[in-house]
Structures are given as structure tokens and as C-alpha cells.
Image (cartoon, rainbow, N blue to C red):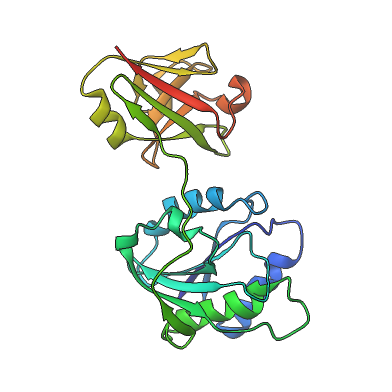
Length: 259
């Protein structure tokens, strides 16, 4: 059974998402459609990249991942299909794929040459992205969609700043449980810590000195840090909303001082 996942900023209130799914099913009724998320803040490609980048590898190889975030049509707009790590990705070439797919993992990229067929040029997801996704889900070749290109539009996210006695990171995502996820990976933390004691500082006066393994390691209502399923350091409250109660927002600084 072919699988097409959807990651969009369309929301769930309007008919847009239903129209997209209907168009897929009309052209490939046996498709299994999986919603990754449709609640990306409008045009926020870094959040979309974070979510899709942490989700796609759980799907079988050959899955087609359709992405429609910050997806406005212009005469010179570029939409691409690419294959990486055995998966197919379809979406605008606005830098989103470069945020979670390393160059070495990308096997092939094509610039899609399909055109919008009706007057609704502000909704390219139907005539360009969905048709391309259905074509690949049917087992069609990438070359049929357009010509091969060698490079993606590249965007980067802010990386932690490291010096001898400190890591300066930031919050990159707040999940539905209001856990604040940082850009500090377990690998980086363990490398720089090297067994040294540390203090995690945020909101100027909030500190933590232990990394826990699960939320229930502390009493209910207490704050903690742990490495979540994403592999990134996150600040949480056991059965509470850390971002709300501690006033944490994306872009906010997180500092780890080594003693």
C-alpha cells in the first residue's frame, strides 16, 4: 500500500486539507494518507523541518512526504522532489529540506516542471505537489517530474556556541505538552561535559544541575531537564507546562556552565 504523509500549515478549520486529501484519493484510492501535522504556524518552515525531520524515519522506505509550508506560487517559484535515506520528499524549495536532511543523505533532486492548470495560482499544492506525490506513490520515476538539479536552497538554524567552560544554546521548539526543546544534542552535551559538573541556566535565575531520564524522576510540578525522543535537551515540568509556567519561548537562551 503506498503511503503519503502530509506536513502543512493549512490548519484543520477550513476545507483546504480535505480538498488535498480528496484529490489524492481520487487519483490513487488505495493510498494510505498519514497526517504528520497541519498546525505549523503560517510560513514557519523551521518548525515544520523540526517536526518532519523527527518523524519521517519511522515510516517505511519508499514513503512519499508531501510538505506545504510557506508555499506561495510565483512565476519563478521552484518546487522540487528529492530522494533521501530511501524516502521521497515533495515541496517548495524554500530551504525546508536543508534544515533536516544532510547533503550526504540526498540521492537525487529534480525541479518539478508541472504547472498550475486553473486560475487559483495561490494554491499550488493541488496541481503541483499532490500530482507529483501521487506519481511517485504509484512507483513513477522522479525524472518524469522534471530535470535533475544538484543543489537545494539552503537555510540554517542557529547552532549552539561552544567555548571552554560553556555551551550557549537556545529553545527551538515548544511541543503540545509545553516542553521547551533546545538545540543542544545529547552528543554535544556529553562531548563537552566530559564528566564535569554543570549548571543549566535559563530565564536568568532558573537553574538545574541534573539531567533526568524520565519526567517522573521528579515530583509532580517540579521542573527538570532530560533528553527527549528527539535527542535534544528539553526543559519540562512533571505533569505541568514548562513553557507556560516558566515563560519560555522559541529563541530564548539556554546556558550550560561547566564547573
